[in-house]
Each structure stands twice: as C-alpha cells, then as structure tokens.
Image (tube, rainbow, N blue to C red; front, side):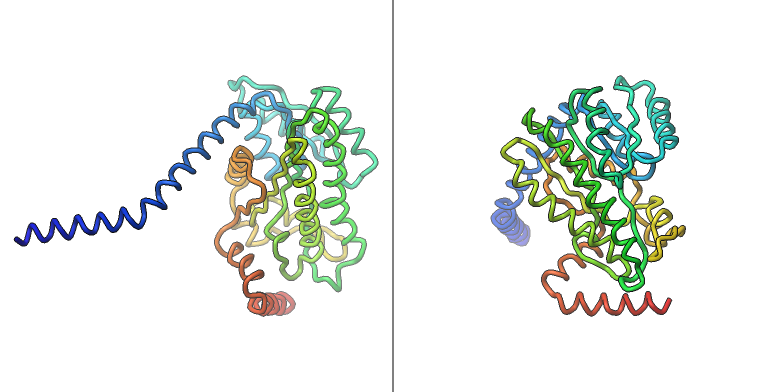
Length: 317
C-alpha cells in the first residue's frame, strides 16, 4: 500500500508539473529552436558581405573585425591610426591564414572630420560596390563632472560619438536604400540607457544615439534596412586610457571597472549573435547595470538617491 501511495503521489506530482509548466516550456523550446535556425541561416548568408567597422584599430572594433573576417565577410577596417589598422589587417591574415576569405582593406577615417566622410564611403563603394553592414563602433569617452567639463570637450564628444556616427550612417544609407538591403549597427553603452555622475558628456552622446537609432529603425524598415543598437556594459579595452578629462587632457588611466569588464572577444561574439538574430535593441551587461536601468524607470526616487550618493563619493575621492 505504501508503494502504491508513493507511486500515486509521484504521478500526481508529474501531472501537476506537466499541467503547470509544459504549456510554458514547449513554446519556449520552439522559440529557441526557431531562433537557432534563423541564426544559422543568417550566418551562412554573411559570407561575402561587405562590413565597414569604425574604431577597428583596437579593442572591441578589432575583436569585431576578427568575428566578421572569420565569417567570410569583406571587412573594411576604419579608424584614425593607419599604422594600427595595418597591424590589425596583418594579424587577420596571419592568424586566420587557413580560412578561405577576403583580404581586409584599410580606410583611414576621422569621425570628427564630417566633410570627409561622404568621400570615404564613396571610396569603399568604388572598391566593393556595396556596404552591407555598417558597424558604428568608433568613439571616445570622458571623465569629469558637468560643471568643470569645458564646453569644447562636450562638443568634441558629441561631434565624434554622435554627429560623426550620424554622418557616416547617412553617407551609407543611399546605396543601401537603392539595393533594398543593409544593416546599421551602432555600439552605444548602458550609459546611453541611464546616466551616471562624471559621465554627462559621454552619456548625452549615447542618449542621442539611442534616439537617432529608434527613429531611423522605423523610417528605413520599408527599405528592408535593419537597425541594431547594442548597449554593452564595461569592456576591458583602452577606452578609459584614451578618455578625456574635463579640461580636454588625456585621462590616461585604466579604471578598475573597465579592467574588470567583459573581454572584447566575448562581447564581439555576442554582438555578432545579436545581428544574426536580428535584434533591434539589446543590452550586453551583467545584473547590476540591468537593475539600474529598470530602477531608473520603475523607481526613479531610489535611482536618484543612489546616483547622488555616488556623485558625493566621486567628489570626495
């Protein structure tokens, strides 16, 4: 009788589990399977696509170059430092010598020189005939409170991170629209979702980029052009080393938060997956930034109090 009761209880437990969870689990599994199939199909279609990557001379841009190169893309490496672009190109060809793909080309590009951008894009079109994917990764950061940050620094940050990115995007769009195909990928930041103290100029530029991408996504959908906005958390790159202070001088320090950030390679791999899954707007960040994002929208007074305490701590350090 005891074994019978135990079997009955086990059967009842299984029945309850199936009744409660299978209706949720099965659609989830189906959705995951369909997502994987879509990702694999789009990965095959990447072969031979022309991908223009800004900020490709180091860090995340360099890691993205490796991802797209291995996927069989025709990679265009763009940044200000031509010597570093040459190094990245050489590394791609040497590290992946057995991969049947296309030799990358180099595009010296200064995002702050808005008048040169159309000509730079035209030179790529003359070589490859198209730009299938634009990855707006180039940018600079700043460390300084709003009051002591010179207005020239605010302007420079906005010029590179926002206006340069917008100008490059607008230069690439006509050829994409003519072909009814293309993708714009913009690398933003979680600080474009919510602002933190001593990042006013940087956060403002990323907030602006968020708004631009949201508007653009809706406008170009009719032309079969996709817009993907990526908002990573801290990445272990030289971003803080190359950041500016409020006076415009080089910051020249590796922040502990940056040093403890995600690897560029892992972030680049996640970005490629987001593109293959046709993500529109995605955060690539650990739990703390995600919590801060929701706190900003669901419990603003708590968020404001936390940021006030953080600002006071930074001012006293």
